[in-house]
Image (cartoon, rainbow, N blue to C red):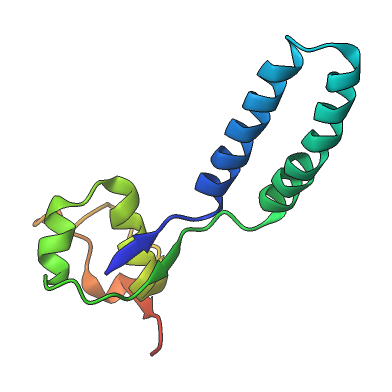
Length: 119
């Protein structure tokens, strides 16, 4: 499975383009500045549209020749979140009994409700 970079990477690309235009504006004459300001309008509008999109990572299933466990072991935190989000819709932990955890210090399984995607 592979995490597909989402909107944030596209926003960074647009902001880099805007930085280039801003740098050029600093060193040009008035007539060129007006043209660059017109050129700047499109990336500014694009950035505004991208920022309005949801920021959840997009995940697609791609066969890569490794197990979920192998991928999990070498993944960073953001990738692990994306992997979990791809298979888990919701996790609900019900209120426990007064007095805390049982002797084995583990929450009882009957208190945990996992809603899997596609089930």
